[in-house]
Image (cartoon, one colour):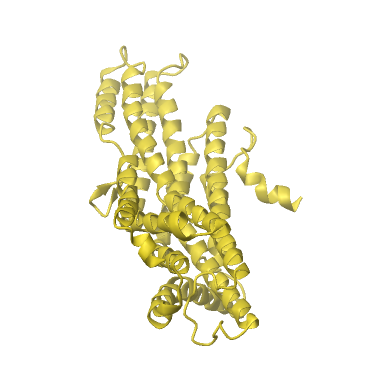
Length: 403
């Protein structure tokens, strides 16, 4: 029963069941609460204080200590690294420095997610038919399903790297630890490896949250946008409605569109910062990881690196893909407005419809850092840098020199 209750949110609810858009964020908020990002508003002072201490601990280890641990390990123990260990550490370190910025941006702007929730709850009230409810249920289950996949993927990388390196007698990421010298004994190695795994788990969860809120919310926004397109298509198709009622339906569609634009406006500064950081890192991180896979890794370490490649690509690809879909849907909305049943409508209705159609001509777009449009083309362009790095390494025979 517990298993069924946990996984029920990845399946569409029955059409007759009323759900809210917030149900599409339920796994995300549970993980935020687990990692210490959502402190309780009520309860005993001691327990709340303990939760705040836990929040500081997870944030300090996963966001603050981890990048410094990597940097100090390169300063103190650079001569002890083998090529594959150094690349495994460096690829994660670079991503970690960017992740520190992304997590900070996400944590500081959590209030924006709550504000968007309020608007989405207002849009939920416009869902009246079973068909519309079914479509929204599909969006909610999809957002939860994708979040679970991200969770498995990110934690799968951390677990596989931990096991593969511990089995070979090395700590997984070689973080600097002034308290323990893992070279001295097997016990110290196990303690160091488990310490690194705990720190990396905290970091992975926080990085996952900073990457997945984008996908979760854009799926929910697109769900409401598609319902808006259906309502536009059905304008003035009910013969029992008066002209005044038809006009009210049109005005409600205009209001719904404004609410969706408001959601995007609230999220835009948050999305701009996190995606800009990731665009700046993705090429170099992928390049180092692919070099490690092609030239230095054994089978098990190579499999862990492959999971890391998939995780890095997942940081931007799903969101960029959904951004492209949203742009296409904006164009489709304009077409549906034009093709709706307006030819014999009153002048007031036509005037409002024309203004609405002109307003939707501007597609909903997100810009990374105010510079780079967040689209699939941009994602592919920055990812191509990885192959440039591999080409340079191969042409200059750098891999053999490192060996």
